[in-house]
Image (cartoon, rainbow, N blue to C red; front, side, top):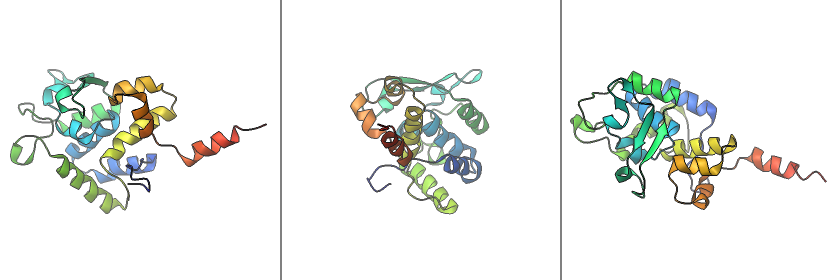
Length: 187
């Protein structure tokens, strides 16, 4: 968490470190890859069904986040599968006879978000990364989209936020962005 009580936004170097050296288990790369590349909440990733991601020919073109598993239980969202996420999912190659993409201990139910949090904390401790939470992946993805100039309405469709105001509170503002804003006052 940062000094404002929000999930820290990951740097590109931290993302590379986590996915190339930190997550040694293909399941963990796939789990946190879903959080990053689908900009979803940890519980949404943990509760994904195999059929929401895999079809008869492998990884589907879209990942389905069913409304019953979303925070507001409002709308089912379909998210395009990023090429990097496709790679992580193919490397993971889950048991397709199971109901959940990320099964819980002993194959029962789905992995719990507390277990996912422990995996991330242990990985970050080992790598010396501080301030990261499971929510950092979602916040990082949404902020990166905003920084790239993607219209907020498009980002809202991906994030599932009910209002643009809720989404805007979520996005991070970097020191460089604040500096650029002040520099724009060139009169």
